[in-house]
Amino acid sequence: MHLESVLRSSARHAKPAGLVLQYGTAGFRTKAEHLDHVMYRMGLLAVLRSKKTKSVIGVMVTASHNPEEDNGVKLVDPMGEMLAQEWEVYATNLANAEEHGLQMVLTNIIKQESINMQQEAFIAIGRDTRPSSETLSCAVIDGVTSLDSKFQDYGLVTTPQLHYVVCCRNTDGGYGEPTIEGYYQKLSKAFKELVKQAPGCGDELRCLNVDGANGIGALKLREMEQYLQSVLSIQFFNDGSKGKLNYMCGADYVKVQQKSPEGMDINPTERYCSFDGDADRIVYYYHDVNNVFHLLDGDKIATLISTFIKELLLEANLNLKMAVVQTAYANGSSTRYLEEVMKVPVYCAKTGVKHLHHKAQEFDIGVYFEANGHGTVLFSKNAEEQIKRLNRTGATEVIRKAAQMLENVINLINQTVGDAICDMLVIEAILSLKGLTIQKWDEIYTDLPNRQLKVTVADRKVIETTDAERRTVTPPGLQEKIDELVKTYNMARSFVRPSGTEDVVRVYAEADTQENADSLAHEVSLAVFSLAGGVGEQPMPLR
Image (cartoon, rainbow, N blue to C red; front, side):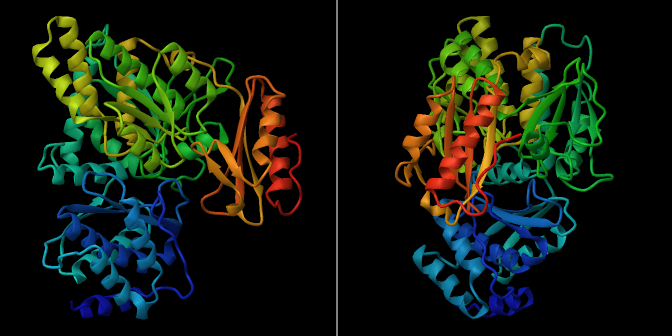
């Protein structure tokens, strides 16, 4: 195989000496000025993946909720899912290869995967609004064309929109029309069909305040606004017209800081939500009459959606296996409410969207959300077929109506990946159909007070975990110490896990009061510091 043109083009996208990066759940992410060679090489890898799968592969240029000066890239597999885990190693090897070793790394991938280089390839490319994204996406295109392959540049799109387009192209339109226009039409039609079933529909226009994180989500939601005007009025904040991407705004800021974003007018009677930088996460919030901030995160969203779907399944008399998938960070109150009140099975997966998505695929209907607001609902082929059949042939009007609403939910959800726009519309439809205010939604259950801390250690690898990261295996004695500490508090729970990117150990604790949660988190931090090789000053009590 002749790779001369690949190597010639590669010289224009030189790798900085000594730079080492790793492809993870979020793809590659670092300062934008270090990514030119990575983008070029991910163009190459996307072509190889396309030839291997005989499918359209996506490449998205974004760093999601990271600061504006960062950027990143992730590949999208044929059904709109994340890149297969075994190919993450190829991505890492390719990005880190020195110039003289590039040909060998490429040849090894082709050989190991038995790729037919005569097979045609097609790549779908998208980017967010960062100043560096356009130049970096041109480097991706250089990689694609150096292997004589075809591409379509979709330009400015949200990450979930690119996932949607890739899935549509590989299902010959079965999932929808593979254009951004097709995305808007599919969602708005399903949303309108759902809300017209609401009691008192049309009495007054629903209003929602949206913080767009000064990113691509605001731009695309504004484009979509015309399709929703008759049913939803959107007030835009942090829409990118001024202000920096993700700076003191966006879903991550709101979740971490536990307060409303800058640049938003807060009225106690209104609903607010925030997207993250590439619009694959969403959180809701409001201020009560005493101006106290209340956050409705991924746990609250999963509970609202799964409760709604469970009720429709009962009305439709459908016996489908449904479950909610959470991580260890899910608040214990949400787990208890789902299992004990709603009788919905809850499973725990390792932190990271790919782990939740994979677990959710095991059920007829799998609802998954991380506490940070990234999540979606997956419907099996069997579930979709049963629901569609009932919509046409249900024995009673109640059954047919429930099935029709479930079918609209299927069309409104982006099953490929978490999607802030889709999730927002699902939430708005459910609140409308159930006549719920955001305050009433928040009252479904009360979160247990919790605290997250981190402890710097010499080597994070000394901590090994099991049971979806809820218990430690090493170092010896640490889990026993955590168990002992937890027993001294009411309604308490705590776990520790190593960071995926730095030498720190993350500590989570919850208990019946904030004071107890803080105290437990501190005591567990001291145990980690003592038994897992803490460095620097030992953790201080929280003031």
